[in-house]
Image (cartoon, rainbow, N blue to C red):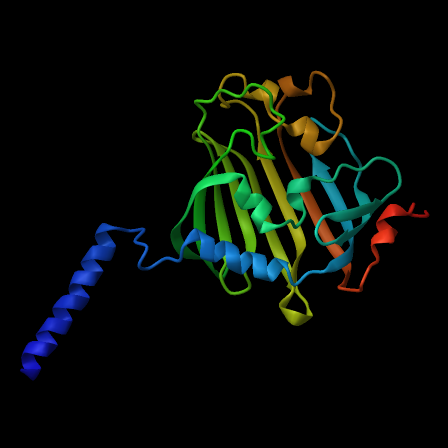
Length: 257
């Protein structure tokens, strides 16, 4: 009987391995997208407010802006304030934001894999972007046949989004990577974020004229959409002050230079 039980256990284990091999993305070995979102949101909700100094460097033919230093304040749920001299374009997609806002722009989200990425254990998620989402809502009449999707890499130890890719059909148009700094109470905030965008040749017909780069990155020349729209934005974060109890009225006051 003992030998039979041993053989049965080996068979069950082997059968499970075969099943996982046949179904690479089996829900038995990966968490649900909702559980990943819950963990991301719990981590995000530890942040009540913060101040940070941001150094912004933009390299792209569509927008000329010298390297800028920006003072930035944030308070939950959505209060922000910026201090800088002159013009500065701050890409909204490069700032930390609510995971719920991100996931609200996606449908059919699922965890499709797990890997080590830059020495971190990550879950890989995939979802389809809604054409009327925040990212694409101002793009005009987008071809509804375009496959708009996003791939996400989530650090499963500190529950932060360390990488994302936005795709139009088979063309990757935006890639965002972030490195994080840890603070007390399990809070993690970015210390550097790099945004790479590739809107040049190969995009589906009509996309160049409707893609929301103008809304995201600030003023551009009228003919800039006909040029190479590739480039990179680097955000370096320093001098954080976290959960200092910033009053709401501060965000209504003018910041003195």
